[in-house]
Image (cartoon, rainbow, N blue to C red):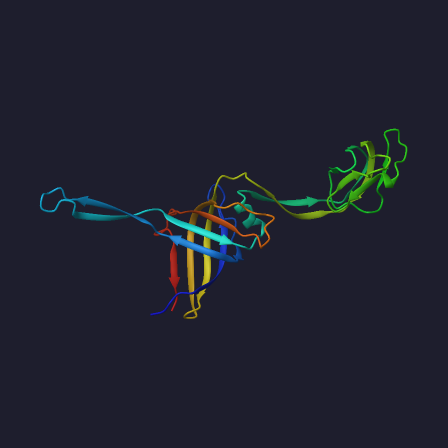
Length: 247
């Protein structure tokens, strides 16, 4: 006899709408992976005088298996699931903008330009009559690509200018949130029972899940996200999930 204290690498394979694998993501640091196999009891009660209210027959019927998964690793693919979103790649090539006409808001407010990662050199501005506008009349957040009129400067009241600048390439990932209604995925755990040192594997071929809690992007601790839902019996499988304990 031995206890079970599991250390495990958790992998997720988010399936397409047609059930096609997109590849396992992981290992993920899962802080909770709970499987609940509830059941419902149907009783036949006696109405006879001598045994009124006693149970004559009782049948236990399994209910849909439930799963709860909490994780604090947040690669784009996992965070997208917690936000019911999809991941797309950001590929902004480098380039130059010449005399693009923009309207500055009054001082104290920012305007987001079409590009980010702007070069700190080579920025210039003109008024609509092509007269130079002093660099002291505006300030730029180069990383985010935002511009604002300088308080007390020539453009403090806002207005149109022709702006020229260069921008560098930007690559990364973008989550398009709230575009999917549910998550269909495979979950696989490669674990070790710390009580025995022996391997433990858990394979859940198909779950249908959704976020159960808000994602607090400004949390004071590491962002943690939770998915909950049902474990489905996938076509061709003999069980909704498998738990293997190796010798």
